[in-house]
Image 1 (tube, rainbow, N blue to C red):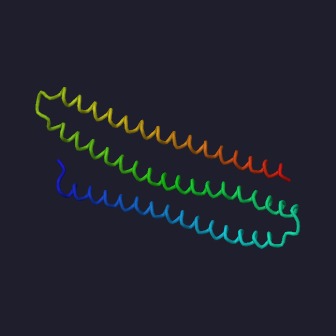
Image 2 (image 1 turned 180 degrees about the vertical axis):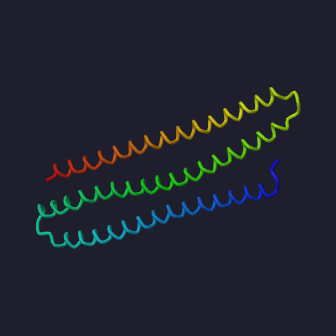
Image 3 (image 1 turned 90 degrees about the vertical axis):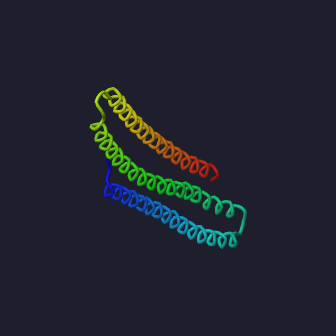
Length: 181
């Protein structure tokens, strides 16, 4: 059985883990805010420069060339911005996953130790119940591991698809811009 010191230590560890995960969440939000401020500042500066350039256009051909030269980098920057958002979200998610997996492993170990201790003190004649209980705990642990592996595989596959979509979007933008010229 767990004594008061063990329970207190467990609660303290859980609280520390909660604050650690909260700190990671705030770090992710800070990165997003920083990215948005930087992107907004750059967009404002570029828009002002483009507006001034449009005011100096002398004919339609010059206007079309100016618009084309403005749109290609804009599309590429949009793809890069989206990629940065994804990277920040993925990095924050990875940090959360590491924290949760570590805590889950710790909890599984503590539960296993507790169960082993409790089962050692089981009354005589309960061997079948003890064996069944151990089998259920093992099956539960295996299920958790399988889910964790499936989530990791899904995340890796999503990363691959996003990378491919980003490359395709950049190529399509370059091709479309080249055809306009």
